[in-house]
Image (tube, rainbow, N blue to C red; front, side):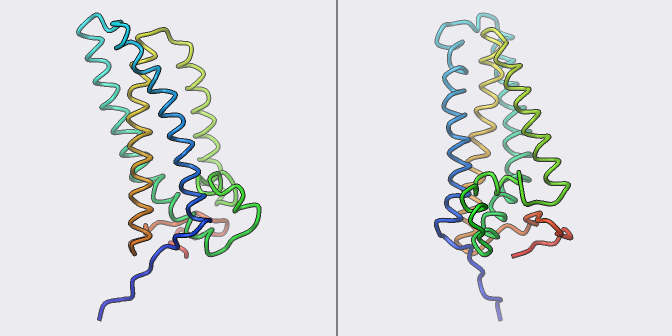
Length: 183
């Protein structure tokens, strides 16, 4: 006999947590896509190695940021935390659900440190890349667009699978969590 299917709740709490974070990512994708397209539109990629660097940026950041960081690690945890929040809503956590889902608060000490360091380093990188002239900024931004787009799609797919009865089997990394998946 098959075990019963456990479906993730499709409700305002999970939607706000997952969709709110995805909207932040899509806003960044839109903003960076404009910058990434500039060197192409203005014919600034004048050398074959410019095109090679553009392709390398897309491949490397697509794989490392999109697949390894988002699809394998962040997306399942974001969805797991949204599911947990739906079952254990607290007003402040619900209001700040996109931030809750990313592990910026109410998480294990390790997750809090990792999340805050990650987002802190991202701010430093964003400020640094903004200082680059074209075509270099566009080359980097193109890779970031692919990575963030892949990550957004991974989050959506994992969430849809969870709603269909296949929730991610990862820990939501809550305070006091021993590493086992909790629901």
